[in-house]
Image 1 (cartoon, rainbow, N blue to C red):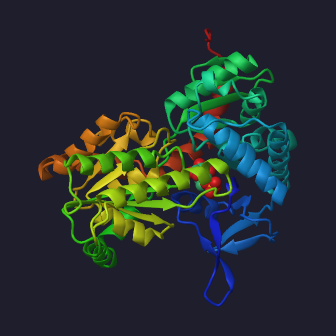
Image 2 (cartoon, rainbow, N blue to C red):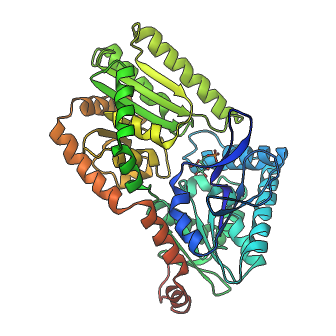
Image 3 (tube, helix red, strand yellow):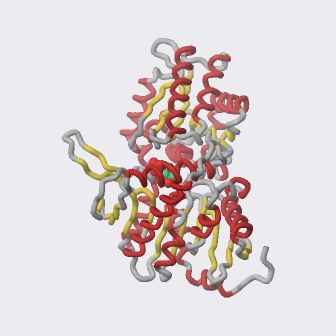
Length: 470
Ligand code: G6P
């Protein structure tokens, strides 16, 4: 059973006004799908909006929608999840807000998810809970159903103790997560942050990646860096249809020498503003010209009712207007800005058309766009400029790594990538493609599930306690 804030489908309305469900583009569902099919699995999640739906099937997947009221959307989803936890867990890039009513609603919604899971899970089933919106579910579910095997995976960063301890409900969150048998993070540092906090704030004994609870249970916290369907993306990118579309995109942009590309949810953690400024300065400095280079920025609408997000959109759009107004020429804007989301095929065509992919978050759990770009470069060319503060930087070491706070450093990296020789590009891209091919989303899901279901290892760690514990 999967328990996640969102279902893996979106509600879409066709031209004749009929609504249907369409599979979301993310790789998570395709990775988990085979396991779900093999075990009669169900997926519990919020379908978006306030409308109530009965359980239904899409492509043979059993989906159980859990509705939220307008107040719950405001206080659980927009409030505590995206106004408190999201900025707190991303290095307080924006100021987190702490409101007691938001917390109360977060607890209430988490309880409803746990109760629904408890009601539907088979005896001894494995339940995999996802992400920061549902951190209390593991403990609530264990209390209701001690027979279950429970895993939790955090898709975003887990902050250092110095930041996490600002949270008035820090202990409850830690205890919520400790309801799981296995707590997965993107990076080893996040797992270490968690273990340290459990020791300091909850007072449990810990040793390396294990937590010893007073009731004799052991919880493991470890890193499982998430990935993408690398083979699927490569195949799509190599198709004739995508090749044609990529050529049409280049043509439409006036066949510039180099295309820079950014694709992000419109989020203040992504560093969109800084990267566009860096690019604009390269043009105004005369290092690049609008005849030779264009920056395509796709900004996917996101969390539009949250104030920080609305302000960010205004800031970015003002900047794009200024850059184009000051530096563009007729038919040659410096930045081609699109506020929209695209299906996988169009994304693959953009990745294929782009010479330099620019991914500059201030903090990011992983960043799958960086991995998708690499997967789509089947000709082993193209450059990736990647923030050191994206989880993906741990694996994609051959990218041009940048500090997004360092404007001059970022400008230098963009310019180096622009001038890089084909040999240099293919040396770097080949190494990154190898990494992604070996560590795809299937390998990720398999490693988490194997670890979670590994009873032998679990009971072993339960009985054999180390002599020294830190
Ligand atoms: C991040 C989070 C996900 C979330 C997604 C989209 O990737 O880790 O849990 O679903 O952003 O955000 P949204 O608020 O639209 O669900």
